[in-house]
Length: 117
Length: 118
Length: 144
Image (cartoon, rainbow over all chains, first blue to last red; front, side):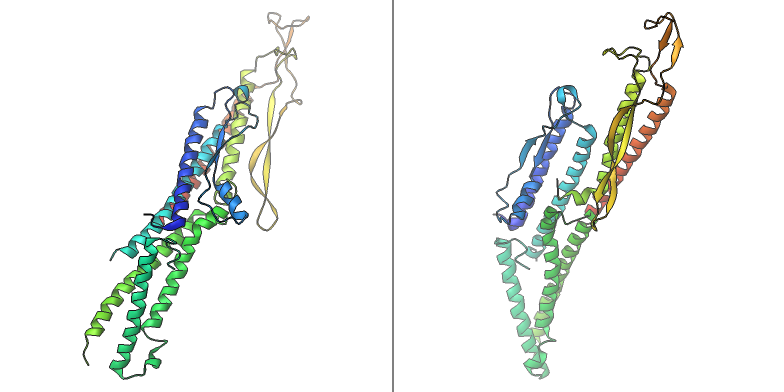
C-alpha cells in the first residue's frame, strides 16, 4: 500500500539516487591516486529535468545513470579526480538528501495528522 | 486540496470522506441556527458555519498547494535557497494542523448545538 | 546538477576558489622542491620558477548583467622576469668554464611567504563553505 501517491514516490527515488551518488563520490575519493582512474558522476535530476522539458509525464520510470567522466586529468596516467571538487560535491549532495527528506517528511506528517483523531 | 496529498491513494479517499461529512454537518448547523433564532435560512448563508468552513478550507488549500509544488520547483531549479523551502513546508504543515484543530472544535460545537432544545 | 545549481550558488564561489588555491599550493611546493635544480632532465638548464594566474569566473545575473561568481586558475606560466642568479662555485657539478653556476630563479623565502598566504586563503574559503553548509542545515531544521 503506497500512501502519498506519485509525489512521494518521486521523492523516495530522489533520495535513493542521492545515496547512490554519495557512494560513487566516495569511490572517486578512494581512487584519487589510482593510475588511469576516471571519476564517475551519477545523473538523475538532469534526466528528470529533460523529461519535464519535453513535457513527458512519466517521471517515475526514470532511473539514475552512472556516467564515467572521460575528461583529461592531471593525475597519474590521466587520473582526473580533483579532491576539492569531490568533497564539495559530497557536501552539496548531502544537503540535497536532507532537502528531499524534509519534503517527504512533511508530506507524511500531513497525512498522519489527517488520519489521527 | 486532497488532490495534493497522495494523488489516487487511500489517504485521498479517507480525507475526501471526512471533508464531505464536515460540509454536511456545517449545512445542518446553519439550518439549526436558523430554527433556533427564527431567522430565514437564506439570511444565514454567507455568514454561517458552512461558508466560514469553506473559506477556511480554501486558505489551507493554498498553503498545502504551495508546499506540494516544492518538489517540482526544486527539480526545475526555481528554488534559490533552503530557508525558502523549509519555511514553506513548515507553514503548510502548521496551516493544515490548525485547520484540523478548528475541525475538532467545530465537531464539539456541533454536538453542543444539536443537543440544545428549543 | 544543472538546475539545482541555484540552491548552491552561494557555495560554488568558495568551492571554485578552493580548487584554485590548491593548484597554487601545488605550484609553490614544486618551486620550492626545485629550488636547487640546476639542470632539468630535458636539458633546458636550471629550473624556471612557475607562477599561477587567477581569473574571475564571470556569470550572468538574473537581469542579464555580468557578475563575478568565483575564481579559477587562468594559466600557469613560467616566470620570465626574475633573472637566474649566478653563483661562483667551481665545486658544483653543473659549473661552467668560469666555475659559475646558474641557479633556478626561485627565492625560497619568498615562496614560503606565498605558501602561507595561499594556505590562509584556502582555509578562509573552506570556512566560507562550512558556513554555507551550516546555514543550509539550520534552515532545513525549520521544517521539522
